[in-house]
Amino acid sequence: MREAGRVELLAPAGNLEKLKMAIIYGADAVYLGGEEFGLRAGAGNFSPEQLREGIEFAHARGKRVYMTMNIIPHNEDFENMPGHIRQASDAGVDAIIFSDPGVLDLIKQEAPEMELHLSTQANNTNWRSAAFWHRQGVKRVILARELSYNEIKKIRERVPEELELEMFVHGAMCISYSGRCLLSNYMADRDSNRGACAHPCRWKYHLVEEKRPGEYMPIFEDERGTYIFNSKDLCLIEHLPQIIDSGITSLKIEGRMKSSYYVATVVKAYREALDAYYADPKNYEFDITWMDEMSKASHREYTTGFF
Image (cartoon, rainbow, N blue to C red; front, side):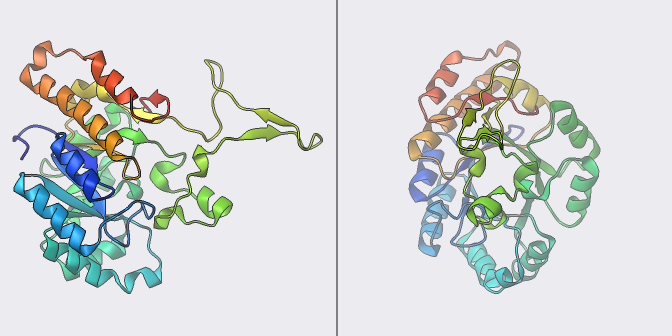
């Protein structure tokens, strides 16, 4: 269990093996998806039996487990949702991550004791929105990736102290405001807001001039230009002191679709960096070997995003 006053290191668990890797290599908590209602339908995800095993593994080591139910639901999605919520509660899930008010209402009905975390899918970009959700019973707000340090700090200053704030520090970025994207729906007939994103923003694109069909012009990035769609990966490990100073509760690593090796490597680097900082905050220095180790895992070029 993480020490009081320290930020939580929250890692992705795409399946049972990745859950164990994340915890072994230093995560304080993991987030995962069940068989329905999460935004990573392509991840291995967890059957009811695997969910119980994963939670037992985590709790035996003082770690926490959060389940995603953060799709943007349509009417038919609510048919099986009550049983899914009760199943999560019975298994010992520590919190449910949601984005839709209807899902919030149903969680309160089916598992009134459940801790509630508001997903980044809800586009949490200001303190008034965060305070509103806190009044609805939300314990933690997962902030949009589109926020700067100063914006995060202002939110922390203006919301109740007991409201926890979580932010992404590592992993894939989205071309749209924290996932509100229809590219996948349009180009692949796969609904990104219901867990089936085909990631067309990662595909390679070329420009075509309409009078020159078949003549493809590549798109490059340099100091004067930028990619169209094809985004970089977020990496804020070099900014941990500033992030901690902002008042953030939890640091989230994206990557439920990534390999076990990726999860272990990235979690280990952030764990070592955080431990080094808390051991001696005044004399803390970033160790480039943390970045070198993470670079061994498959990734796109890094960026600090909007931070």
